Length: 418
Image 1 (cartoon, rainbow, N blue to C red):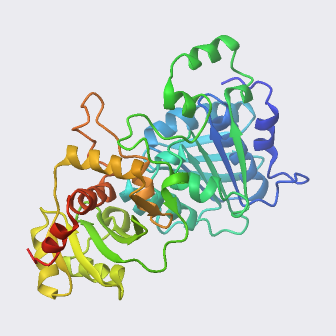
Image 2 (cartoon, rainbow, N blue to C red):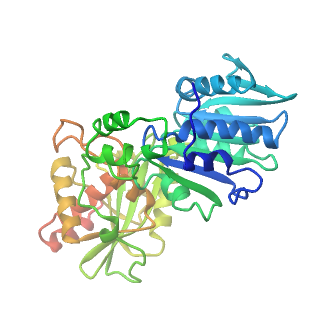
Image 3 (tube, one colour):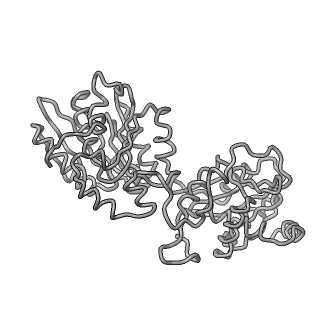
């Protein structure tokens, strides 16, 4: 790979850690934005040069979605440039590391693939001087946070680059939007920041994408994807920060899961509007351990607190959990209506009419609203079975409670325990 002149933004990436830089005191750097904007390579080169400036015989982490993609997209071009600059590079393919040496100094760069939740185990027990996450938005949060926890060497720093995903992605909400709070330097890239691209190449890339993908990959915006089941849902309009202090009625909706996530929502009726006051959302894959029916029931009790919950509207297929609720005797339980297409239509109507609102503390619910989508070419009857657990418990609630024409009929159902 041949080096060209760096743009102003690329130079800031290259020098943010240098003595005399106003950014030197930062603990992390975050570069997001368009494809082919030149952020990945200049960050990787800067990462290695920073390591040699601050450490000797240090261990570092280079993380990608997979080790194969990391070697192809980052390590191979980086090696070519480093060797052209006089660095020695020795790679162990089986050991997944790269030894880089220059002027009597040497550092080791371990390669990690962060493809799923289990990847976090690969990095446990190490002590690192710094870690670079290439395509960070494609990695599980557990892996990223485990890698960051390994950076216990004095002066360690974190390096992130990515193309945008949906606006409620954890990297966007917890890092990019909180960059100052986390003492991180955030730089947003477009193709104009890459002087190696000709106008013809930029025109070709602009012609490859439309809609949300154009916004993400060309403009570098964190926007929702196409095909959303509830495109009418607007966090600005349909969420609330301060919920009502008292409600006339309380109901809990439940989508039960053991391997899949388990989602409960506490609803309160006030002023003719049902407010999702708080949620319980447990993903056994994310947390690393399953929970039993009794453990989930304990969280149901905690969610309800001392409130007079009328009924738990539950996943009709969760026979063992339904029986567990009945056995404890505190809550009436009602099997939810489970017509998917009709339920989705009813939820859409409830959102548009303002009959339901979501508390901004229900973070997994808000995340799923931004991800829940129809299967491509499948029509409205076929939403993708991903990111749908809070969506299902909301659908159960709306179809079973709001869907009844007469409130008296609902009271009769709520008094039944099965």
